[in-house]
Image (cartoon, rainbow, N blue to C red):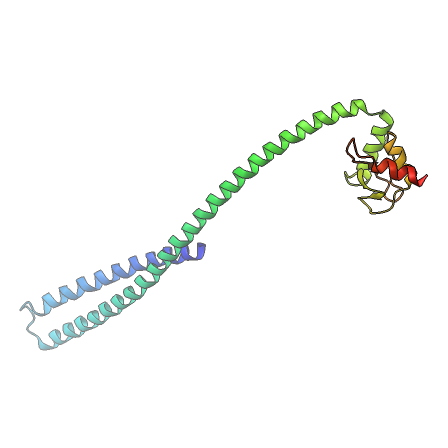
Length: 206
């Protein structure tokens, strides 16, 4: 876009100079023609000199007009290109504004959720033993915020290693926490209140 704008600006400046040159050459040619054919020149040699100068100015006029036509094409092309690029830039700016607006809205929503979750965490932390909470915080810092793994039967979903039956049994019986022996994350067992598969499995293994 900047290159096209420069071409348009420079072309306009050159066009102005060429038009001034053309006007000057045409004015001089008309003045010489009036002088040569106004009946005041009696010397044939002087008239011949004036006619040569008039012819030279005519060629200069033709050359400048040709250059102006070529310049018009260049300036016109640059002008169209600038308009197209400006339209594209305007579209991109509009899209950017919409993206920023969406981002700000989403950020505000997420900040609200974070504040809500922080409040919930504070409430839940009060119901958890201090030792368990300290253990959880240490693991979260060490393991990249993923301190708890859900069990899938006898499998730790974080590392996919087997969990000893005795640990599953402790979880079912309401142990404060059990750790995966492989990845050291705290284990969490998810089950419906009426689901007795885990208890039956743990009991059968004993």
